[in-house]
Length: 139
Image (cartoon, rainbow, N blue to C red):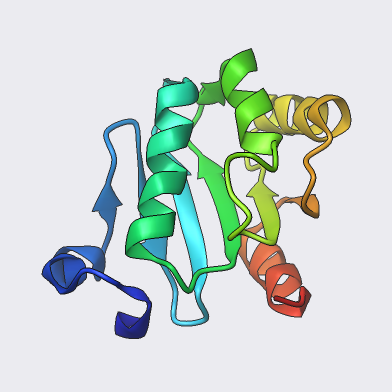
């Protein structure tokens, strides 16, 4: 895991997480960035910029993103549009969204169908399924 961190000062903290306010990032030993959105949070474009700027600067070798969200967490329309655009990052090559709650299944389905992310994006019911798929995606 340590090989993925650019800033050595973050190494100790990032063994568990990189705190970003409304969410946090972790990276597993296979280089998958895990974005965990806190419950009852609505992410806005500033949050999306902060997430991808942090991935870009602190985890420059990361290529795959897995998203989990607490109950009633969501992205506002502008944040969904930004998150699905190629403008936000060309570093991440695939997204896996874990939808543990029915409301997440509905909003994630809408995100994929309406916003049509430029990179491969799939929905999963479990973290294990999501990681398995991400590990099969080519960098």
